Image (tube, rainbow, N blue to C red; front, side, top):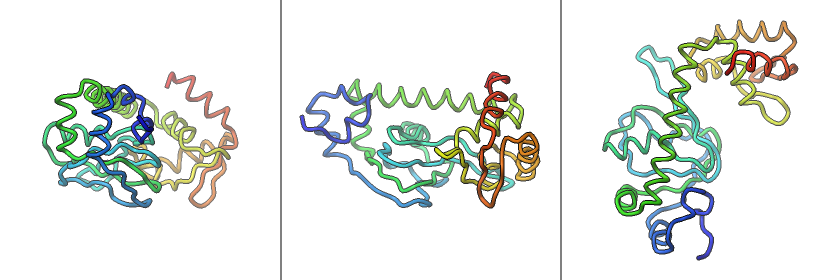
Length: 222
């Protein structure tokens, strides 16, 4: 069969030709610009989104108004919260924000329900992705409860840095990433600067001592 977007997802490559055709016919490729709110608390989950390009940030807001980063959905992945809401017929409890321009496949509930019920390959794909993300969320909880903030920040800087070792994020954004106050991020970055690991400019953090950050992360076992 002619190659389609399905071939971008390893777990779907084993779909029989008739199911592949049904999935392509029953879904739609959509595009949203950076900054778009893809879903919000209280909205119903009507489509499973499989990302082709870009990234979506999933975050939750506490009663005090603090935003806590949960996870990112990258190209080749699906959103575990959407999967959970569709399986349980519940509304969203968090926000999904397009961090970049996003291209995704929207699989409507009718197609999703039918394939989960009748296609073992599709069902395995859905639950394997769900299982991986749940493991990631347990790791996040473990980090928040047990890991030192300086180690968590070092790890996140290494993760977010581009090819030029620049992190394009303010102290407030980094605070949201790690579920802490901007002031805590500022103090920790000041210590990293004292050690020669980072230089800061408006809205950016330059990693000037990547090896030091990596040593800190390794020594913690993170």
